[in-house]
Length: 329
Image 1: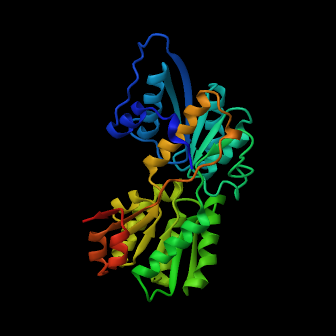
Image 2: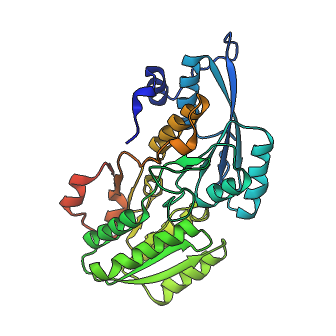
Image 3: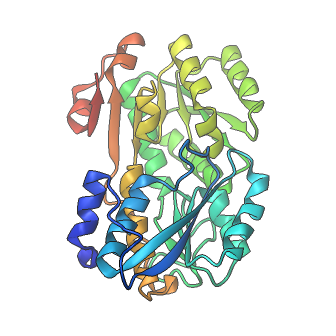
């Protein structure tokens, strides 16, 4: 559990209001440069995620520091990540925040000295990013993603939604080692729950056509999609297909359910960014990543889309509705 005593009231207020509190004209301020690296799509504003900026800006304002951001996205092209990471290192950033497994792995290769704070990088010990959760060692720390527990839990939700389900298709980016670990965790949990897994690996956008065609030939009782930059960029195809074919689909994050998916179970992206911001600011103030134990999200959110359930002819069990953190009408 992270010691939150270091957070200022101003930081929490900024997260809640979504308003940066920094003024470039502050006297006596120190400038700190933070890099951001993601394999996902570049947002329209070209900025690092707002929850990260708001928390860091607020903490910096209270301490007389100004935070400058350098953000880079590979937009689903992992081959671009090494060059983008090298750009951030060359800019002499004070720390790099990464989102996803490949960006974290590339950042580790790009530098042994610049502190790196990882988010959504999978099981950070199993993927070799850190030595252990308690003592990460090296220049990397961040937020863990306990894939084995979460993947099994999501499969349990599939069985609660569709008790008679016998075959579940799993779609994931086979080019991402962290996501492949998630897939294997689902495979291990499947026999206990009495289901067979249909693997649908993808490595590039065209592979989604092959995956969807495979489901046309052998219709599964449900679909699970493992989230990374590649599947995020192509999620509409999966969500639309599941709706058209009336196949229940379970996802990892609420954004996919708000976009029309049925159910998700996972950490809140904004909360993860705030946790990462806490670590980044500790590093700015002198903490070493090797001495910052890897954190885990404070809680996981269950999100259900009732409109999607209705279109599928599904009645959501009361046991799920009671546990839901967000129910979309």
